[in-house]
Image (cartoon, rainbow, N blue to C red; front, side, top):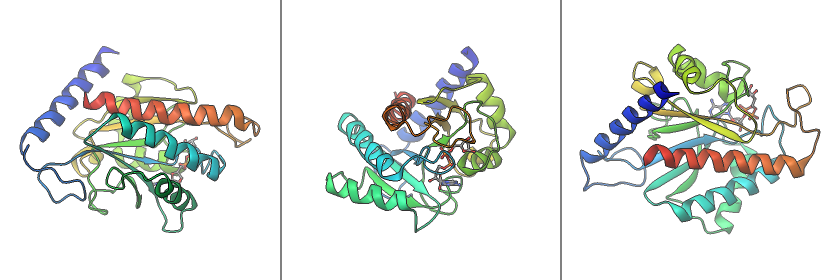
Length: 233
Ligand code: AR6
């Protein structure tokens, strides 16, 4: 809707201003410099509650990241998961090293995606959410965590942008500045992504159809990264 795109423009303006304050300093790692590199933090879509195969998911993540990094400079992508023992993080690290992906532009990070700045000292201006098709809060996993920390303003802002989302697509939601996720963690946009579902207890289950599932997961990441790029334009 027009409200959504007006807010998107305002948040883009904020981003431009924050970047113009100190154009001579650019740091690729950490949060110590006054300037920063536009960074998207994202969880591994579909691999927990939606039960997608981890090995296949890791291949798709690294392929999509690699494609994206060839087309854009001055950005970072960070795959986040909660535990040191995360299987998906280690599979992705291994494949990413094999493909010689620049580790300053893409790396994995252990932490809570809702506390990257305050707890992890990692500044990410955009975060992705592994959402459900109704774009509703709750339901566990990263979706519940993001909606909880972001507060009601994320629900309201989300409703202005979309009612539902089909698997393999994503939507950018500019985060109002009164959201704690914005004021505390300095996240300016949340991108909701719906991945393929392999869990028979959830809607739109693909019944182990990995031909379709892989296609949908690729579309989900392509849409996520394209939307991240659109924020920075
Ligand atoms: N910070 C970082 N990563 C997290 C966090 C967090 N706070 N919480 C979970 N993860 P999932 P899905 C990781 O299940 O498989 C929801 O109910 C987690 O370890 O959140 O796409 C929605 O409403 C895993 O690596 O998403 C949907 O209905 C990744 O995030 C459904 O689940 C994704 O796990 C979506 O299922």
